[in-house]
Image (cartoon, rainbow, N blue to C red):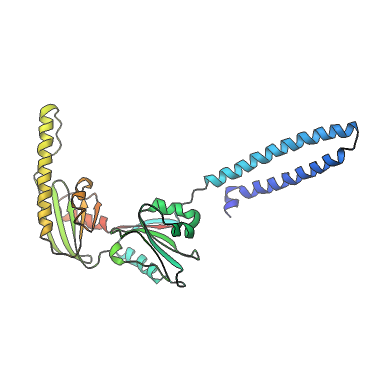
Length: 294
């Protein structure tokens, strides 16, 4: 079907016809060797025709190769799921079953494992595009999907009779804290699953942008950096008092790295406004899972 869509079937049929014609002409050349002057003229004409046909064949073969190289595998489906939609998708994945050792589950961070490439073939390029991701596929080609989990496990490859998923990688479970850290705002919630059972938050007086140049600009930036550092220290103190099994930190890309050593996961999110509504936005962004179908 792919050959038909790309127009290669017609090209290949034409190549076969031309090759058959070329062989026929070559046979005529062999027969004409014993003829006189007229045969010599026919031989010359046939040779010229053969050369033109070979040039044409080479051109058509080049076009076939170029269409092969131009094939760009695309995802069958992409969507972002959260809440009930995500739960439904995960339930479907968990219900998929096969023979022992027929279903592969792998977490791909940077390098794609050999087992994933062997199973998916040319579609492995899609895994690289989706990474970091959790890959689920079976040896019959019935299942081929990837999910980008908010909480990344260590890279692994596993074969079983069904996808091996830990819900804690993909959706809110158990007791945990989720914090939002911006340069002037902090908020943290303690959750049981998707229900918030505790909250703390505050604003800090951090200077905004400054347009003046020279010494006053440098002094302003130094003062602002000191205020942000003090704000980060205050956020760290607040998190030290949080009672939760796990900690996820979201917020400003420049600041979440300050908490990476103590957090179970971090993520940059675009959540603005006052602490409590901003935390709600951060929660929705963090627990959104990108889904890919191969």
